[in-house]
Amino acid sequence: MKAGTILYYSVDRAIDVLQSATLPNDLQKVALVTFTDGLDQGSFMLNNKYSTPAEWRNAINSRMPY
Image (cartoon, rainbow, N blue to C red):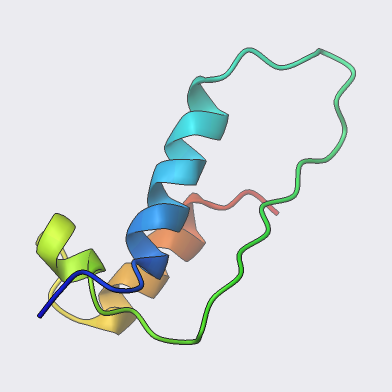
């Protein structure tokens, strides 16, 4: 199977980039917008530290500051 959609991996990497960026001190909000077909066929091929979609989702959710 080819990688196809890599939703969880992409969001996880986007969070890494946001956390490592130097942002203005007066920044109040940051939005992370994704466009997807609702599938994730490739995240497990790129990173196997999670074994289920629920583990990926929960890990990403725990990294998002609200």
